[in-house]
Amino acid sequence: MRERRTAVHGGRRDREFEAFVAGASGRLLHTATLLTAELPRDNPRARHLLTLALAHTYASWDRLHGEDPYSRAREYLAGRFAHAAWHRYGAFGRARPHPHSTLAGLAPRERLILVLRLYEGVPEQQTAALLGLPVERVRALCDRATATLLHPPRRPAQPVTAPRVPKAAAS
Image (cartoon, rainbow, N blue to C red; front, side, top):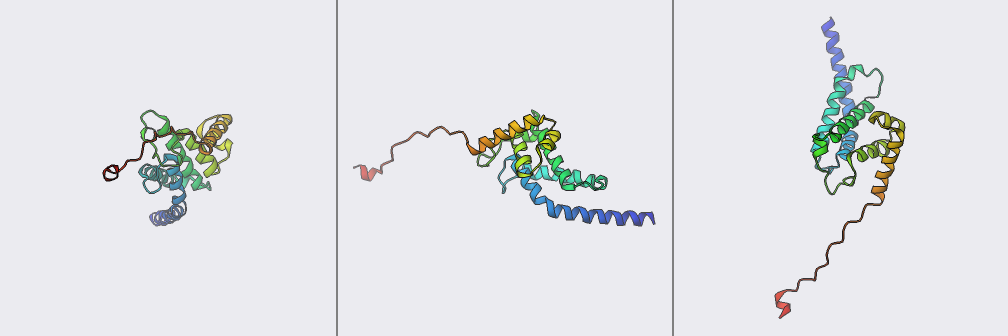
C-alpha cells in the first residue's frame, strides 16, 4: 500500500513539475540568455544554466511547501550565475559575451542586477538580499548599467580610406 502511495505521489509530482517547466522554461531561458549575454539562437551557456536551475528545482520540489517554484528557480539561476561569474575560474566569468548582444557591454554583476531588477521585476531590497549586497550598491550598479545601455560609449572612429578605383577606369 505504501509503495502504491509513493508511486501515485511521484507521478503527481512529475506531472506538476512538467507543467511548471512547460510554463516557465521559456522565460527562464530568456533570463539566462540575458545573463550570459549570448544570442538567443546560440546560447549554450544559458541552456546549461537553465538545466542546472531546473534540476535543482526538481530536487527540492517536495520541500517548496507553497513557495513559488519560479521564484526558487530564478534565485538558483541568479545565484549560480553570480557564483560562476564572480570567481576567477568560473565557467561564465571566463566566457566572453557575444559582441552583438545588447548587454555585452556590461560587467556580469551589472547584467545580473539589471536583469533581475528590470526584466524580472525583482524589488531592490530582494535583489540586495539575494546577492548579499547593500541596497545602495544594487541601486548604483543598476543606475550605471541603465546609463551604459542608454548612452553607450562611443567607439573609435574608423579611418577613412579612399575608394578603390578599378584598373580599367584608372587608364
